[in-house]
Length: 183
Image 1 (cartoon, rainbow, N blue to C red):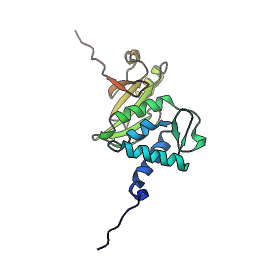
Image 2: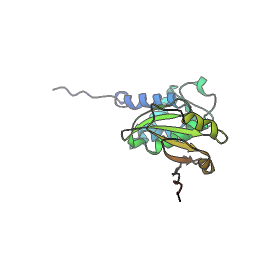
Image 3: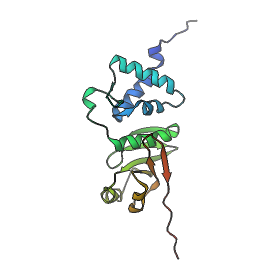
């Protein structure tokens, strides 16, 4: 009987491919965000990222954000970054995720449902509400990311599972709109 031993590269090949894929999908991720894509393996992910940075397979800007190549370092999309924090908040329930089509930043399957994670910058409420009122063939549910809770009362969007804000440290706070009482 022959026992096949794998080297370190073979053992971490899947994680490395997934990390590169995430960096390409969501340019400007922080180290903490990248590591959180690997629940229960965050230390391994941190080591893997350090190795990829050293080899020049991934690049980090002066703000500590990671990119697939030096040309991609054209600035961080703070709306996308906030949506990634929301995705990471329930990553252990996510079967698949990818970049969404505007106005959704991220699409993901979680617990058998398709979710759109939609950022709404202040001042863009009316425009995005109009876009989201169009008939949708894709989304089952929407998670709406607002900059401030005062925006929620300005929004009339179908299929909203909930609203949330994201703090600078990545902490996500969720809100549900109260149904109006009829008299």
